[in-house]
Image (cartoon, rainbow, N blue to C red; front, side):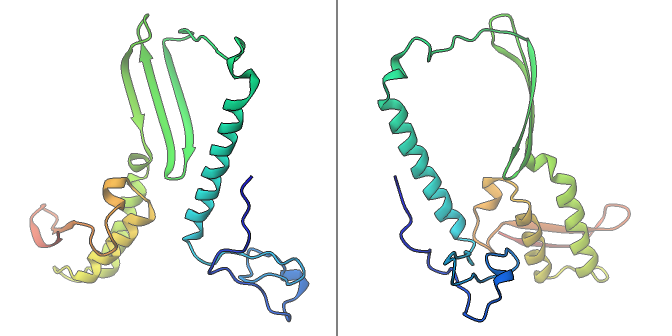
Length: 191
């Protein structure tokens, strides 16, 4: 079994003057010395936690595969078509996923409709960009700071790998300012 021997770097401990009522409180960035628990202060601890979780899963998988019941005839399940149409909904870190499938009599997919989180969050992203525009657009000109704010807003929704993998300030963006007749008043672009 894996164990974390010390708190991750960047975590903090409370001073001796911390009140017991704030011990281990999510609102408090510190902890009580009597319980010695620490609260991570860096978002990179998320990756550390995922690594520990992955290691735990691998160890559990190894234990299951070495178990005597793995070759039991009761382990295998034979599935067949019990419905020709199905819908599934799952909550994922990026947002809600909707899957809708139709299959033929042989179980081959005839039709599928996937509503992924990026599409599901599109209205909220557009409204957030509108709020940035209301704050930064004055007259008929766009500025470089607006590109940075639009990028920050889009990143809040973690749209997809192709959009989220660019370094901050390097996301390709093109913004056009249109008038009421869809004529371009100004455009700004970052490749």
